[in-house]
Image (tube, rainbow, N blue to C red; front, side, top):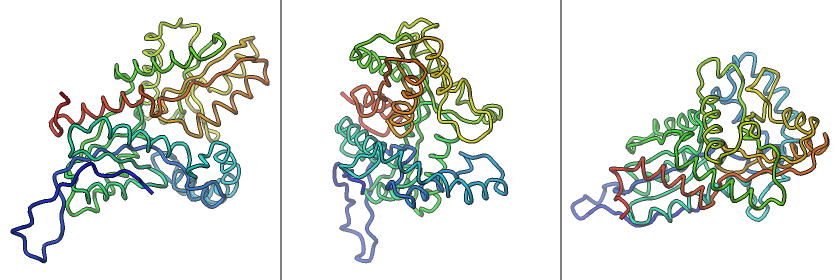
Length: 357
């Protein structure tokens, strides 16, 4: 259940309304943080439901339906839920019985709400593109609180059709069902925003200082996508490369010590290269003993960082001769992470909320 609470009550003057007039709140401003999603549980059927919703998205899998349907329903949804459920179980937040992405996104929303308290009209909430809490349910809840204006803030620094666009699509589908639509703004991707780059660098500096070794190489790894998506005009690859370059320059790290790679490939088609796992194996074989990874494209840690990067890829490095390995955490709800989200929210809310004194 979503725990965000409205910050204040804004009730219209009903003194002149007839008794039969339906209740309507108004006067509030909503901010809805949007992230990818996480299964409701780690059992076979929960995983199957989650994977089916995710892999049925035409923004994610751009394969003709006649070809993809039997592959998805007869093979993938039969074989993958079990192993994926075990992967999720290894990083599960057992205290709250939820995936870490849900825990962190909630904390980000709560942290942002505390930073916007000078305008009591603002209500901050969060939603997931896949599984729960759904985008539709949270938009409806914000409207019920009286939010006539809503800022959608996708937590994807680099734009991609399979992330930013599908999150927006889901919100727009929900708006299509509303008789009284709120007015909506969408925050743009922020891959080269100076505040994002600076706070990424500050977070990295803090986490590198905690290590008891100095990495010989640092990898900036981003979630991959099929090469054909880039060929068809998706700007994601360029966004990632620019983020990586700006981050390296801000940190003052030499070019030959810094690599940019892509992870989490799926299927047999060529994906964006170089691949993170293959790069890590080769570095170890070439004699690199100390390695650190950072994942600038993830606003919150999740399966792809906590299990794939910090566990699976660590094993690849050590199995091939590497000795010291570190995954540097995502921004999450850290001071640096909240500074980025607050900056974007305030910029996109200008003209709607009171300026911070």
